[in-house]
Image 1: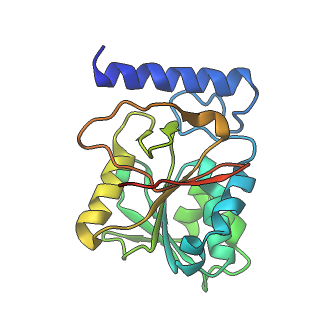
Image 2: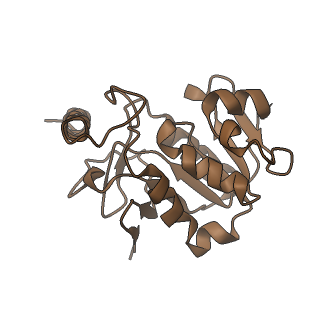
Image 3: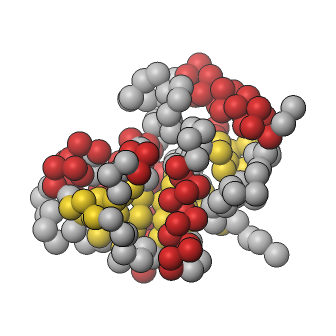
Length: 203
């Protein structure tokens, strides 16, 4: 079985697992998506306790619902947020924390980001990247929903600005023993779940 087929099998397994266990939450069904999950708020809070988060002034975050609380917390704490528009069709959205005081909850949704944010062609340098995953392993290898946009977003930012720490928020059940990889796949440095935070150590 080639790598792409292995990735597809892994995605299907995780989507099925989250659905059967009642972990997947709105929007449903989770199939074909970066799955939102019960405990996503707690995972975001655990991420926000890290030094990498506290030092960050600009956070780049994917637009999926699973990371809504990441975007909301960032804005609440005065951090500017940059989002890729879905499938990068309209570039990026810049959310200015100072201008969006009291609107953090609304602006952290995809619809709200388009309403209250500013469309930009070139993203500013982020201090932290937060990406979504369908599955991830303890070595930081991730698999998304299959479109390749998460990898493209991360690789674009690193080409522009050099190495930037990459984090993800997932449910514990999304952590697997091994994620099959391809040369273009981007790695994650920090995994935050509702119960723990893992920092990937690379030799």
